[in-house]
Length: 68
Image (cartoon, rainbow, N blue to C red; front, side, top):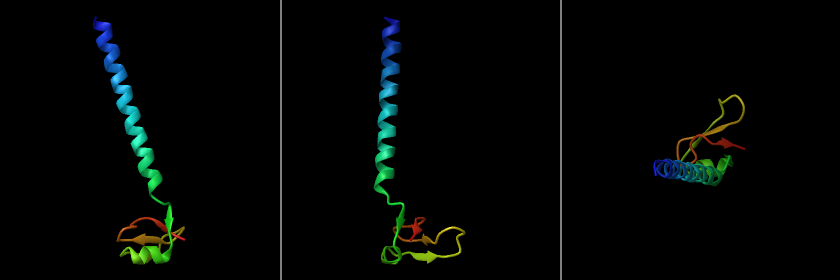
């Protein structure tokens, strides 16, 4: 009887962990990796060209995304 409770708890934990990982993957896939300069400024942001690799959108809807 005790083993059944432990197994049920293990399966419930594994199921909840799987749902959490699925939700995280879905959320990250919905966000584009980069935006165009027009999308950045239309979303209320400004283009920060002082970043070392690629320009970055600062502020607005696309804050923190790279601009290509």
